[in-house]
Amino acid sequence: MNQVLYILRRLVTLIPVLLGISVLVFFLIQLVPGDPAVTLLGSHVTDAGVAALHQQLGLDQPLWRQYVTFLGRLLHGNLGESYQYKSSVSALVLQNVVPTVWLIVTGALFAVLISVPLAVWAASRRGGAADNAIRSIPLVGLGMPAFWLGIMLVLLLSLKAQLFPASGFGTGFVGHVESIILPALTVALALVPILVRSLRAGLLDVLQSDYITTAHSKGLGTPRVVLGHALRNAAVSSITVLGVNIAYLIGSTIVVERVFALNGIGYLMLTAILNRDFPIVQGVTLVFAVMVVTVNLLTDLAHAALDPRVRLA
Amino acid sequence: MTAIAFPGRTTDAATPRRRRGAVNLTLIAGLTLFGLIALAAICAPLLTSADPIAQDLLQARLPPGSPGHLLGTDQLGRDVLSRLLYGGRTDLQVGVLAVVTPFVAGTVLGLLTGWIGGWFDLVVMRVVDVVVAFPFFVLVIALVFALGAGTGSIYVAISMVGWVAYCRIVRGEVLRAKEQEYALAARASGLPTWRILFRHLLPNVVVQAVVFSMSDIVLTILAIVTLSYLGLGVPPPTPDWGSMIQDGQQFLLTQWYIATIPGLAVVLVGFALALVADGLVERFGQR
Image (cartoon, rainbow over all chains, first blue to last red; front, side, top):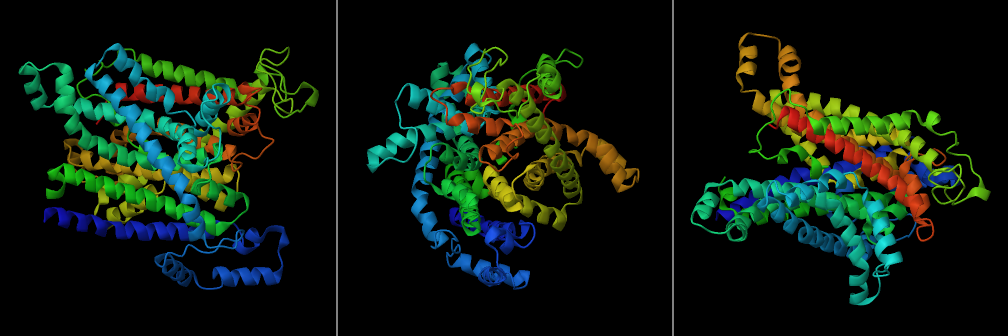
């Protein structure tokens, strides 16, 4: 019962956020300096063209009515029409979303597989050489541009060692797996510095709890205490840490897709920027925000499922 | 944005706090390193005589260590060292300046919303929720695209997105400080609100915002470099680390250093500022 109530309450809080997202995305086009139609049409501008585009974009309507129309379209899953491809933005997003989802899922998996062992190692040998080495990762890693990291990985693992393809999404399942490894490793490594830091801190908090002291005083060895007792509790806070930071990972996919010429929605957005295809930019920005909101929702639900204190609060 | 919104929070509660007055090596090392980088960028004309935008196709893609070109030349024969130094000027300047507006706006707003509370707090925090729902890079890229590529748009876009983190941090600090004796005493003695806020609360709550601003500068420089790499940032002839990496990407197999060197410069700046942030945490403590 509590569970259901909690989920319902959590879903209600989504409404203002989703509305806000739609307002912000709607206002993107208002930021275009001067007459958006003239800017969008570029040098081929004619009065008739401007008037037609005004009507098509609804720019001749008052602002609030433009927004209501926009919101109505969104609720029907209509993200508008691309100027360049003469096809609906929703269809284009659906066509391109698969590599992006692959990238996010594999990237998150890699990030966990790299960060968790490092954080556990550092926290269980607190103050030791390993801990100090692992704690210096964020110092170096936070300032590393994700796209540069990708280029360096291409240089070392693709051009020099010839282990992985340097770009594209490959064909077939095996091809996809082969070509997703480097980009996924890039987004994962961009997140690892942040993740290791928070996970280690969360683990240390747990290790200072009374029940851990009890476990130690029962005479259990450190590995047993960390793996058997601490990790299970630390997992709860770690899921939140991961959920909060996944927004960063999702954000870095856009540039990494460009580095690896991976035709996901980030690549779609960047190509659309070059072509000044505004509806695509607007649509993909919205899809990215909805992705983050969804991940946050799932994180909270998982947290509540694992930790009864959350849903009773 | 949310990703590194509270980077300093992770210091160990149990680490014995350093004595006041003890030498803070981390802070000194960080400030020295950042100072040296900034000095090298500012003194670029004194350190190199090469013109960062002068092309010489006969001298293109020379390896590092070539006579007259310590770090070699790029595909248009431009001196890499000179471009690196002048590029640092652009990126550091924009990175530091772009953080000022969000710092001030976010701090003031966080101060007000934490103090006033009620509907004002509710409204501001809902706006914060909306902004953090977007991945930082996606929103900045979309905003810069809408505003038109260039430095001016970068300032505006970073300001529109960046205030959120400061607002959250300062609001949290104010909520905590509000109930402490000094704030209660100031209120009880009937001081005007603005005086309590800016003279009594601000000096106490601003520390965390300053600590965060160090990693925020790094994040902002990353954003600028990324935008330039995508062709949305600093316009082409002006040297900048992002466009240098982009130039180098196509010659990766033969001249790997063209793309590698500017990336290392970004990492070095990030390292220096991370040291400063850690040093500040050490000096002022956390929470």
